[in-house]
Image 1 (spheres, one colour):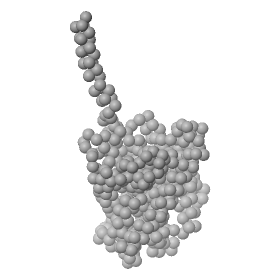
Image 2 (image 1 turned 180 degrees about the vertical axis):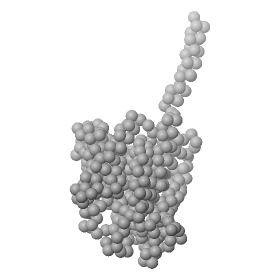
Image 3 (image 1 turned 90 degrees about the vertical axis):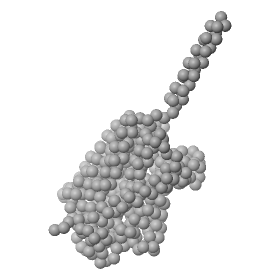
Image 4 (image 1 turned 60 degrees about the vertical axis):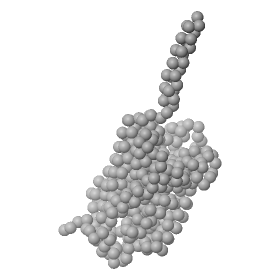
Length: 441
């Protein structure tokens, strides 16, 4: 009897010893190769949005003598921000030291530097179920394209050296803190407020749009603006760039989930639908106002819809995506025609009109269409409370970004000067600043 009891006890202990590691392994995150493959692809798609997508979209819209200046700015920003992201930017966005859920501390506004130079990252480090190295690279592409968007506002008139200095300071003092407030997790300011922003309506589009407005106000109008025709020199390139941005946007929005899940299909569908609805909204408004729809208008409408759906894509149903897309198409068209003319600012490539206005509309309408009664997917929220949270997020981003961007521009102006000389502007930035021409004929 004693022997049988001892044998049973031994078998039980052996079984328990075998089960405990399995239970521990079940709790530990494991690498998901499918999500990893997708996130690598998504990172490449977002980089593709900037280089060559945005560079072509912007480059085709300026005069031929400034074509390469847009490319050099996009490449220069990619190199500069990519390095700064690894040195300290990633840490400023993701470091949660000093954060407490529901409480406002200094680290609710910006992360610390404990992850500077990616300290603590190993080949086995995971974020969710993907390698941290993939996550770092994906987020880096967001950090690159956001300041690159701003370049369209001061196209054809800002010195390259001033643009690089401005972008370095803006990335450090504006992008990283706002991205942390939105996506820093429990204890981050906008997380505490309950702001919904799935893929960057605040941190990317409103941020870039408002900084663009500050830049074009500070710089003043291009030489000859309003008196000299300044048509786009190659709309074919612009249309190609816009198409690349549309394709890359799937990486932008779906990739923001950090992997693949059931919601990925909703995000994909909403992204596509809003782009299509944006085309119709812009096209019919332009058709009604001026009698003819334009190629640039259709491309701009697609981008307006994409900007608007970015914060909302995982939270709204197809009805919400349709409404956001159409309204962004209509209102962004009016902002780049009526609003800009009435206020008299020279936003060269309509960054504020598309990204600033579109981002604000999308962020606010997220609060309307996320509730189940409007076909939304967010349970347990009331429309009034969520719209108020979205308003807080929009106001915080707008005010903080405009004030700090203005101060940075003032500092850069004092250090290096912002604007190219009149002779340089007359010659064109390509030849005067880079000693190259886009076309030799």
